[in-house]
Length: 69
Figure 1 (cartoon, rainbow, N blue to C red):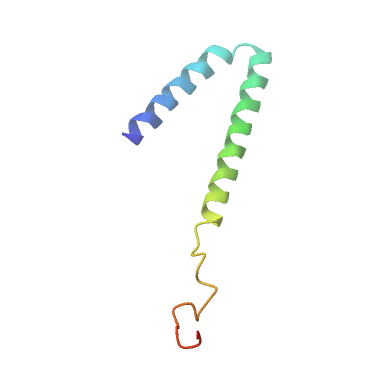
Figure 2: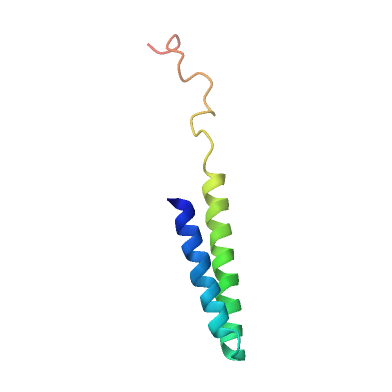
């Protein structure tokens, strides 16, 4: 189902590019929109991957109950 969504987005963006590419003002707006979208997507992906580590890996004695009273 995800692939169908990507195909749909590709078709819509292709249609948008074909309709707006003749107007110089629309060209600039489309380029700015695509660059901003790519930067936000990359930022989200990097933030998601950066926080994907195991948060409990820093305490090696966490499961050790011998030192607790």
